Every structure is written in structure tokens, then in C-alpha cells.
Amino acid sequence: MSMSKLGFLCLLAFTSFCLVPGLCLAEPTPRLGELMSQEEIAFWDRSITPDGTNLPPGSGSVKEGEEVYIAKCAACHGEDGRGQAPLVALVGGQGSLTESKPIKTVGSYWPYATTLFDYIRRAMPFGQQKSLTDDEIYAVTAYTLFLNGVIDAHSRLTPANLNMVVMPNRSGFYWDQGASRPTQKH
Amino acid sequence: MASAQAAAETSPIAFPEWMTRPGAPLSGYGTPAQHESAVARSRMSSPLSTTIGASTTPLESLQGRITPNGLHFERHHSGVPNIDPAQHELKIHGAVRRPLKFSVDSLLRYPMTSKFYFLECSGNGFLNLLDNPLDASCGTLNGLVSCSEWTGVRLSLLLEEAGIDADASWLIAEGADAASLVRSIPLEKALDDVLIALYQNGERIRPEQGYPMRLFVPGWEGNVSVKWLHRLKVASSPAQSRSETATYTDLMPDGRAEQFTFTMGVKSVITHPSGTMNLAAPGIYELAGIAWSGHGAIARVEVSADGGKSWAEAALDAPVIDKCVCRFRIPWQWDGAPATLMSRATDSAGNVQPTRAEFQKRYSPGNMYHFNGILAWGVEASGRVSNVYV
Image 1 (cartoon, each protein chain N blue to C red):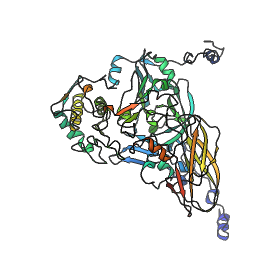
Image 2: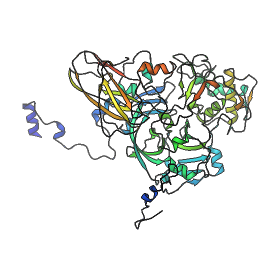
Image 3: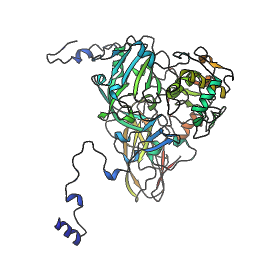
Image 4: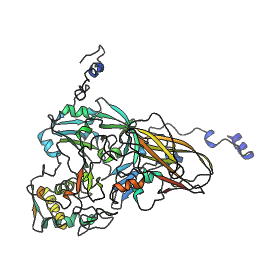
């Protein structure tokens, strides 16, 4: 890095290194990032992927979930999860995906049960986000899956079995692996 | 004063009041003219909560390419958080050698990049997919698109500082709103032209656009430009979050859904004249509109006044910028007979805007995302302009 008398970094010298795409030296930055602690990463990393990564300890049953659901969810989703607009249905809609008004629910559309847990944990219940305990989230996830006929009434979800739940529309999604390239359709 | 009054009493020609006394004092932050107060976003919110929904840019009231910050479209999933920048951090972790956190103040010290880009919600124009054309304004129908100069830190600089693992291929971005919205983007794009945007049209990003910072992903559906950005996780696969599975996925004719259809297609719309306007009388009008494409720059905009039977090429305002709104204009002589006005854009990658029918054929009838079909305005003999399907 050359430096002029005034202290300006010589950007020209840098650009001259850019002969090979991808090997270009980054431009100088103040590098002010501070190292995160393991505790900070553990608290903030709430991305739960389909393989079950980051599922927290805990468990919940369909029966326990019914109580949570009636108290915290039914007002917006309906007692049976089949709320009509403006309520948001979580149940039903099978066979509607090719119709002009598809009903996209957990049972008819969502491909992963882990996504349901992840979404409830970050964004529900509406108005009291991030208020449920992890046990309550396992339980209400179980109840929602039970309402959709995905698991039976005696089920209990845990970090070990949530990612094993096979959703009805699991094979209903695909993506173009070259999606990031600028030549894709649309 | 007395002489002005005397003049007004004796002649209809007189000084208007504002020429006869001092106006308003200096102000700290200016506001639009009082007589322009009707120019506002049109709001569509859930009956369950006014914090869930969208508001559209009033395209019919604007000229040029830049959207004023207070009129940029909004799409919120859980309201606009009131974030204290002193307590906000951008965290980068996951498949990196050094998991890092950056304060807002520290990011403001980094080298900045400024670019003019459009931003469009993937649901923009969904009302044009209803069975019958809705009689509404251009903005209400098509205004989930806006254009700004975005200034911020290139994400590649921060990822380089954190040191990405060789086998990483995705980046998972999370917002600090109550919805904690999550989207995944391929690392290839993140390292290409993505910004951590801190300024919009010269001023710090407004709360409804993600204050104190948002991800800005040029040319891609607006939802991936995560607002109130506070966390980026480098990963080897996408998160499969709700917003990339249950929503923002395109239903295809066989009932399956395509995910990660990021790039916004080439599109245009005539803003002047447009829906709900009235042409005063036959004569010369300037047809003007906007065109944009996530694939590159606008190469050409053709305009038809006879429902697509004949087309003429419009002039494009310079400069024509990659992944940015381009203003087009063409003079039009209205003879007073009914007319159908349409525009068709072509981008630098050779993509041509499809007809509405061609677009619909590609998808399941219930798909409401990524509509970029050719739009039409009908002009009646009375001069009334309304939304029509061709």
C-alpha cells in the first residue's frame, strides 16, 4: 500500500492488482468489526433450518398445544384453524393450489415443519411476538400439525423429531439452482 | 396596501395576496406545498391490523425517475419499529472465520457507494391479475415500485473482513422488526453488488424503509432487501424461512411452486395519462411513463395508442441506468376518439415485456407474484382514462 504525503491511500496501485477477477484486493477499510462472543451468537442465531439446526431444548405435546392455541392463536386463525378471511387459515386448502384462489396453509402448502416452529418463534403471536416459551412453541407447532392431520393426537415434538415430520406438500417446491445468475427467466 | 385594495375594487386584474406581504419563515425540514397534500401513498392493510400491509407510490403524480422519500412504497409485516441506532448492530456470523458485529457509527466510517436503483415488491401489479380490471389510479394498481439513490457500504467489504469459509454459498438476512423477517440470498449475489444501505436520496434511510440500515439487493424482488437489517448468517443452504416458502413463491400450472425467483422482470407503465384521469380536450399530450428491469438497463420502450396494432418508439430520459427506473416520453395527438394506450419495454438482456395473457399462461391462476405483463389504459371519447385488459 503506497501512501502519499497527504496520507491518501493510493487506490490506483490497488486497481493495478485487479488483473484476475476474484483475486482483486479489497479496497482499504477501517476494519471496525468487533468479534462476537459465543454467548451473543447463541442468543441471536435463531435460524432453524429443515435439518433441525438450532432447534432449542424443550418439548411440547398436541394436548398442551391446544391450550396455547385457544389462548393465543384462535382469534386470528379460527378455533379450528380454518379461519375465513380476514382471518388467516392454517388448515385446509388441499387441492386448491391450481385454482384461482389457492388456500395456502400449513397443511396444503408449507414444505417444512421446522419453518413453522421458526416462524412462530420469531413472529407470533401477533402483538406479543417472542413471548412464548420454547416448550409452548413446540406444543403449538404440534397442535397446528395435528389440526392438519400431519401428526396424531398423542404426539409430542422435540428437537430430535421435529425435523422428521414429513409435510404433505414437501415435494411441491423447486428452484432453479442458477437463480443467482443474471440470465434466468422472467 | 391601500392602493392594492383600491386596484382590486376597480379592476379584476390585481396582485395575489402572496405578492403583497412576506411569506412563511425559514424552516428546519421542508414539507411539500400545501396544495399538493393530495399526493400521498395509497394504503392497503389487513383488516386484522394496520401494521400489516402495503402502501403504493402515487406514480401518476410524479415525474422524472426519483421517488421522494416520503412517497416510497411500503410493505411491512409487523409495523415500523422505532429503532435506537445507538443500540443497533449489524452482526455477521455463521461460516466465517471472524464473527463480527458493527455499530451504526462504525459503518458510517466505511467507504460508501452511491447507486440509483429501482426497488419493486414481487407482488407489484397483482391487482392486474384480477378477473376484471379494477378502475383505479396508476399508483394504486402498479405503485409497489419506487426509485432512489441508495448509499451505503458494499457488503463484500464486510464479508471480506469477516472471512467467508470456502464452502459457504448462501447468506441469510434477518430484520430487527417484530416479524424478524428472514430471507436467504446466494452468496454470489451478496458478493457482487449488494449494499448495506444507510442513506436514501441523500438523507438517512427513513424508519419505514429500514432505519438505521437495510440490505439492498439490486434488481431483485423487494422482500430480499431486508429492512432494519441486524443479522447476516453465512451458510451452506437457504434458511427455508416462511417468506421463501409459504409466501413469495410462485405457483406454477401443475400446482408446484418455484422458490427463489429473485430477479424482477422487464416492465413498464404509462403514468401520464393513466387510470381515473380525465383528458380535457382533444389535442397534443405527452405520453410519459416509467420502465425498469432487474436484468439490466432499459434498451427500448414502444408505445401503442391503438391497443397494440401499431407501435412507436418512445424517447428515454438520459442517463439510462442499469437496474434503475427509466423515464420514457412520446408526444401523442388525441383526436377525441376512443383509444387504448399501452407500453412495451425491452431490456439490455433482450427480455421483452410479455402480454398479460402470455404471463398468465406461465403460472397457476392463483399466482400473484412477479406480474410484468403489458398494461393498458382505455381513453373514452369523454376523455376519461381507465384500466383495461387487452
